[in-house]
Length: 225
Ligand code: NI
Ligand code: MN
Image (spheres, rainbow, N blue to C red):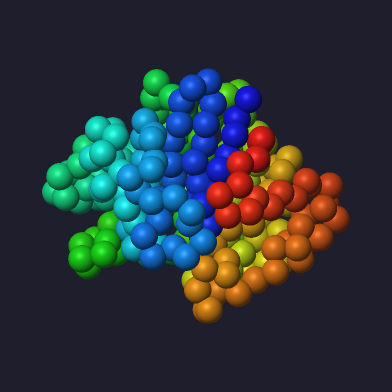
């Protein structure tokens, strides 16, 4: 059984078989987050790209938990420079950790780190835990590659940004879910800031018209994948 806890924006935890990881741990400054970095108990921190609303509290959480930040090579190096452990990967590559398997996927976006350092290409993640596959798109526009990744890696749940402006909006995100061929789709990266307003129910209406189950998790809510 795989459980997902949503902390708002693009931050979520996955838990299965006694293992727990957090993705894009933007907690300080995220008004929707109900937990603080000190509350987070995980075996890994995954970071999709260098922007502050994704790197977030990764260094503090990794140091407190004595665990690694999993990210692309450039961000992994930067994390080491901040005094935390890292595990570097890159797009198209996968690795099996004690808690599950991860593959980095492409994202169409930027990736400069908070201090301006180059963060390499932005990424998304395919994550296998508890017998399920979760696809987290990261910050990205829609791209036809999604169909290929979905065909090669059957997806139980896709987490897709819908806030528009910096990423896909509702219409493109719903079409991305169709391209991915995922069983379920959940909207993320919206309503955190005034510039990314979106209606998650409109996203659900659109994906459900294609036979995809729409999921919405409240802030701090845990759902079963
Ligand atoms: Ni970004
Ligand atoms: Mn973002």
